[in-house]
Length: 554
Image (cartoon, rainbow, N blue to C red):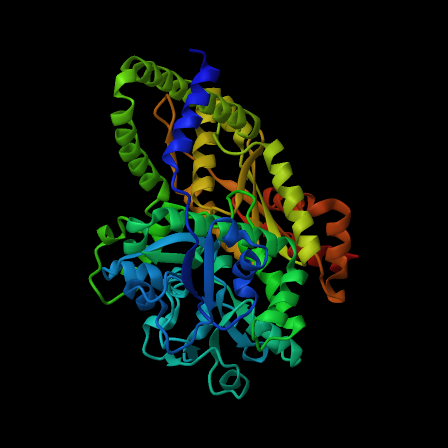
């Protein structure tokens, strides 16, 4: 029997095991808030027939403050819903909820203040009043404040409960409120009020949000329905992000909303930045990030949660498919017992095919790694970085976003190499690469740029936050010691150059704009690095500071 014949046989077995065909399933789907672009993918999946393609009829219902969506799903009154990090807290409390997808790669919830308050960073929150939706800060906000040694631990800071309303902030009754990047900043801009945003993502806090979830009961009894619903929902989101104006018109026509066309467009633009990530698929969930979120919730909670409660939170429908296939195979073997010799051959060829596929996947991964990975340090090479840089520049120009470049160079590396040998120099390069790679976020790009030089691309990060990260990495490298073959204890330092790209800067930054457009953000970071190495090394220098010096001397 040839391999091609075996594949035909396998397809025949799969077709037989798939009967009967799914009947049309009706499911209830509760949104988290009122109708808006935040749920555009689900509207698109209904309108374009993606759910119907999966034999599903969806009753979509707007959320409300009086409804607890998690309890609605657990009780079976609804089948699917949306939640933020409170879903992980519910799982830690023992509630049988299961995450299907994470649509937002980081939380859009930020701290918002009026520009006149001069609150620019967490250290300025002492003696301030913060209003939040629940009367307490979410774990990703607490993690940001904890990292910056915020004074929130002191009783001088007051936290009040609100509903994301702007009136107390505008009236001066509170100093800061929790806000969504997609909503309140637009309203303040329309009112002509300047504001400041304190975004945890800019400080390296990278929490998922807008989980699509269901119950353990549904996924255990009808995992194929969950699988089909997830597949259609992702198709809907892909369409909505590619066709925002069409879906905005759909929302206005069919879904009661309080938002204007401009507000929905602003929401769509901001969501595209939060949701798009070329490094992972739409809706992807990294288990290690879920684990980090759970640990953060445990750290800032007064309850004694057990991390083991997270087991099963990301139950895969693929596991259920394998189990179901095994039962169907046993059933089919009863009918094919007289063809035992054919079944034996089937298993032998099946094993051969699995080995062949495994070898092919391994070869594919090796080839991909060889193209994009530096063989010595194990991180991205310059070729891969150039692709990421080009994409991020185009994205920022199109959507008006910003990003930063950090150039790093090992100080006196040639002298170290000449003194202790190339093998020792290679160990230094590998260790510095490891420190840099471990110190950045999943959405960041870390690469070896050449020789002893490295480079970081930090999306949605301004120069100040990039400098904070660079300083932290500089200290960590300086604290690392190496032992040479002659037992000398060697300390390595690095110099850092930081530059920010921003598509639309105001006229007061014209000098920076001209320089950045002419030379590119990488060139600006490289000049900042040169300035750092020229001025005593082992330091972090900013391109904006250099341009101020150049402007003064011009």
